[in-house]
Length: 239
Image 1 (tube, rainbow, N blue to C red):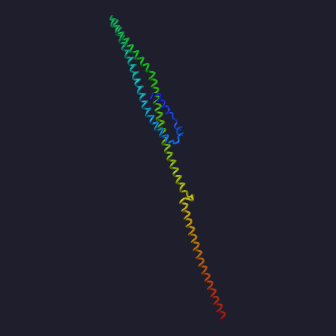
Image 2: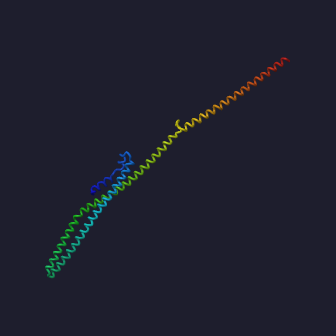
């Protein structure tokens, strides 16, 4: 995977608008679960790719350091050879002096080559460093988004469970509505009222029968009184 591809994916995922995605989803919870899986997988892949990119950068930096150190070392060797040549030339050993000057020239050539290699690598190292910094920043943003996604998912699940519990409770309350004439409670109340009415009717009927009996007794008393008076009248007339 190229640096450009990695950087593009990290940047795109890090900028993802979670709320906008949820607004368009038919099942937000399933979409969040899928996004969490995608983010987790992409973070894992990006971490491996970024680690490789950082490793390459560190190798470039190590090579650059070696070139810089080599340039300094060849510079020291050139200086030492040049001084030795001057010393020999002063002592009259021209041929030996020329040899050390030639050695100084060779060292200077190696120094120039090392400096050139170090300078050539510097723009690449700078660019790679910038890419690594962006990748690190993007990865951190992705991890923050993953935390946000997980929190959103947990919140959504909790809210869904609460709503489900509320609906279950409301259904239960509706099913035992005492004002519902078809409910068991209402039917039982009607039965009790019918039993109460029946008891009242029987009580009234019993009272009516008792009154009739007393009225019959009163009528019997009146007949006896009449018979007695009639007998008295006859008895008096006979006398």
